[in-house]
Image (cartoon, rainbow, N blue to C red):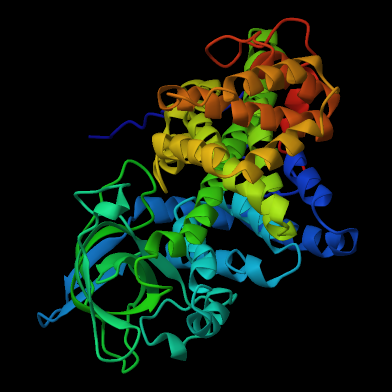
Length: 549
């Protein structure tokens, strides 16, 4: 009997935006490009622009976007033993992961310490590369941030710094001296202590060779467990101390580094975070015994800035996708981007993204400057920015996904990956309360840090009455630091907003600064995005955020 053929095609696909691909992620970001130009010596601008545009084109390419999707669809797997029963404790990654990490290392995202304008160009690159895939930002960040900690021991720094700042990525586990480049991880927190690292119980027993120890204990979170080396905190006879734990020893044997399991995380799926055990693990001391926190604090400060940069990158990509979608999508007789209510939402999101970017690059520039005043500013501004910017990331990502409607709830859009990733930087390197308390400590113990902050926001004095009023109110609140802990979050939020307002008033287009000050500082703002006050010029704010290069 003959079988009939039924055609199931119903209609052509229309009114769907083109995929946002094949563009320069860096050049398309006006807030970022302007910040880089502002903080870079004119003699270097052409070189830096070319370098970052090359990375931006890579991040926006179809190939790299596919790598990001593959790395998330095929998360790392733990192999504790080989086929013969030997303990190997290795983590297997999809090839796309290694390609992404290799591109990041090759682009100089671990070499800020060795180049002119190194922190600004590296910060911009980190923000751009996060938009391709955020997971490989962890080893890039750890490797970059290990340098200031290692400098507590000049001999160790001379040995390891050239490897960490190399632009060569070699994935194989072998002695670091045989590799052209190395990556680093970190192990600080333990089950019983979490952020309270002074509660750590991992023990360090001195060995016969000066500066070497044997570690016994555990780490509840170990970042990037396939790295060549790790900075670890442990209790030595003289107190909590920082140690360098190599993954492979000089003779080619594996150091004792037992990976118990990988964390099954909400987001950051492409990256491995592990629980590890030390049992007779060989380590070298970094800095003096009993000064572990002071030694590692340089690493922590650098990774906290990377949390700000990572969140700024995620926000930028979420906003770019939302504006791109609404530019092409038609509903109710016109483009979504032209609808007053959608324009209000998009402008509100764009403000949050630009404020985060401008603040992050200002802090990177302070690292490059290196003066005493700029170092003092970082002491206060980094934890304040880390607190506020990372907390704004999740609501921005969720609202941006809603701009795409049901399409934004579908994995293929990429927005769900951004939503899952968005809370991470708020938790990593000390959650919100830790940052707020760190700001309070700086206010109470380091007058130079507060003076540097006042100098920075004072550069915009008289330019906007709402900013001036907010600064005066902040000073009044800062005048009473007794019993301040319970209101620390509110205080740090205001400090971050005033700092962002000062930067935007000085450097952003008038419509951006005006809208930010009216909503974030002037009090004319609702509880959700899309509640900007009536009468502001929002079209240029949205157009400025459109990803066109």
